[in-house]
Image (cartoon, rainbow, N blue to C red; front, top):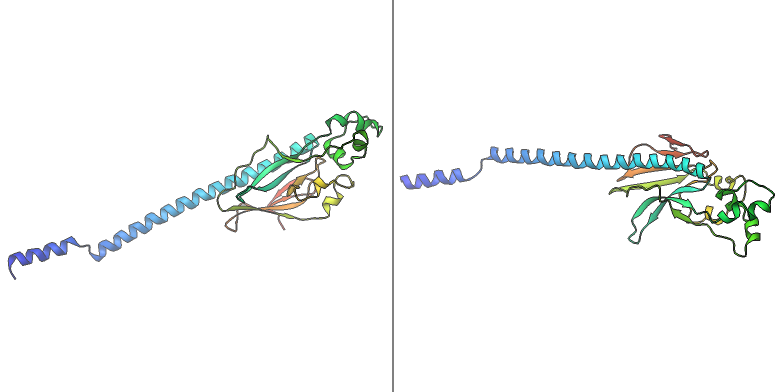
Length: 226
């Protein structure tokens, strides 16, 4: 073998990678990919947990605000035109302001102004005082905003006592805005009572945090779902 042929063979061998070098590169890339995966997973977990804590804090505040105002409030899951579901806090509008201290109270002989819950549960006096009885509606509460659902996160609400709705509101027959399809999935009646439900926050079918339970008295328990 000539010297020039031997030199070309040595250069050809030096231009390639050895098996050890390839294995080392693969291991480094695997470690780097694993670190990136952990970083992304950790970021998603933090976002999901932050949403969960924001939700529980908001529900506690809604309960207090509903009782203070004596006005029905709730958590509603609303879908946009693209089918994306967003949780929002809603309030039952109060179109009875003009009747609270005048017509609605004078006909009953009660000088105490009535709140939205009392008037919405019994519209007899309001109807008699007006040719057209006002119709309340569920409106988004401007004082409380919830963040958008993180990617892959869903809310599941299960009613624990369907018969509770018919017994709420001081044993009075409730109007359609408390029993129709547009009623919030989680509802505080403004009297301290609420529909008993469990709320689950899930990310790709895995539970985020613990199960949230709304009790009939309006209080909230964490981690005692059924």
